[in-house]
Image 1 (cartoon, rainbow, N blue to C red):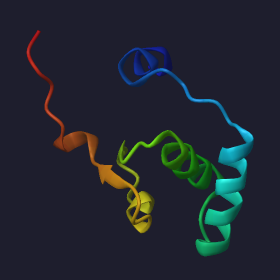
Image 2 (cartoon, helix red, strand yellow):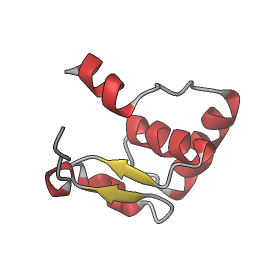
Image 3 (cartoon, rainbow, N blue to C red):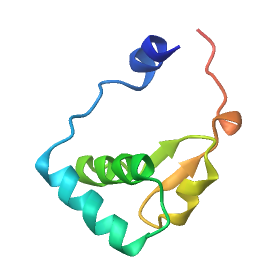
Length: 78
């Protein structure tokens, strides 16, 4: 499933110094957030990604990111 996700959602983005610094800043403004969620949001923000496909409602707490529930996405016919 992970490999298939990379084919659809890839490429994987690197954890850079800018992402780490953005993660730390987000942690200050979202003190109860999971570290992994903070890294995901920071990566999106650094890459200019505005929408995140995930069923995890915790991402609704970030005004800079629009969470898209995967059950609401329809697959286009091949």
